[in-house]
Image (cartoon, rainbow over all chains, first blue to last red; front, side, top):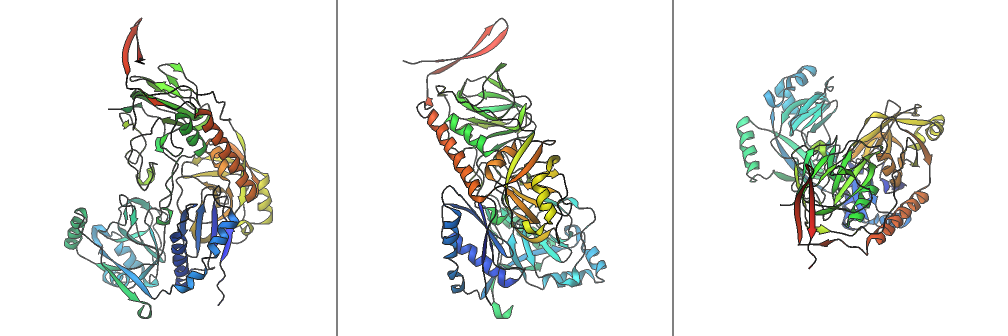
Length: 245
Length: 342
């Protein structure tokens, strides 16, 4: 398979690098790896490298480097992509309390799919989800991999305020609200974890990570919440080999 | 302590600097001054680094009490600034005494005014920037717009300066503006007629325009197939066209990822122009090449260098012998400062 990478100007400070035409894990792996390679070069004239599903947006300062020179620089890095073979994935385990006041729409999702609430929790928490990219709001992960058995349309009227950490379903997608924000997804639970630490300027999840939701009870939710406040909590991580995925 | 006190807040006043870069991959937009040219000019005139944080006032400005001897510069839209009741010029260095009151009214041309103080405000940088991202309470002064009673501390005090050579810069009031555009990655996803209309018809800035984006209305822009694309990064100035077939221009507080077709991207120098335009104003888009856009940027850079040269012989200095007095004349109180030059 020929993997042609295309380059286009995107405004007078942007270059759009496209690595494929569709959403796939393979293309996104290459996006994640190539954006890391570009960032490692540490060019002072590049201010932002923004990876997405199948493309990378590079923001540069045209007063310091010409469009053509920058593209040639980046093209010369393409050969490094194949040298890094991705065969294992970092898994971040996300504790979630499902239902009740933490997930008011769990019943709606269950009824919509003719399932019990327990079934919804089981299906939602037994798969690995891929983080394709972060964006929209600070630290918000675009996830892939949800079972169609629990897909549910969004709410007709979005809620004005959804608490950060809320886990929702919107159509065929699932996601985590990384900040307090309005939103129209069906909320099925909440995680006590901090998904974007403004002080440390760091998101919990990164593109290319896998996540797995782990059901917890209220006691555990409060315990973790308290530990996070005392800065004593570290999210559980593990490694997953490609063959076993 | 040296601070300014917001006596009466403006409509929307925030601290903004040149912007927050390197964090868009995490979903954190750059924010920063909407009119970066005016921000840079205000910093150059007052003697700061070009990227320093300043106050950005929108449409109606604040009433500010100074509890510091400092110098300031005002650029951008003309909000008829008055110091202790008297008109003061824009694009100039102004000496300020403890007890002085600076009052802004409504913008008579343009929309956004920038107020710099020498040495900048003592604001903690969040992700390398002092800019306020109001929507998620990130950066700036408590992550929000300024309110009555807010005290913002300054880094430097007892600053004095000579005026420097006069500069003549005026914000042109633009009710109809030519906004130059580089065609976007999805340009050919639009009908032939729409690609022509986009550059020939006028579009009006609507009320739903803010620091996040400008929504325009005008001749419908029709997609060949679908308004949706696979979501990807969004640069400033990107003109998205969603299912309602009207353009939205992404500004400083935009989302970092977008899922709609982009017909074109406004060139950097015209973002500043657009930032000074308001609902009801009309724009006409003009297609230009990438090379021309870069020449415009170089021209702007050259102008900023010249402005800097204009002030470099008259550097601000610290004067520790400033004595402040309150003088009452005919029932009116004046703040007077004397500088001991011995």
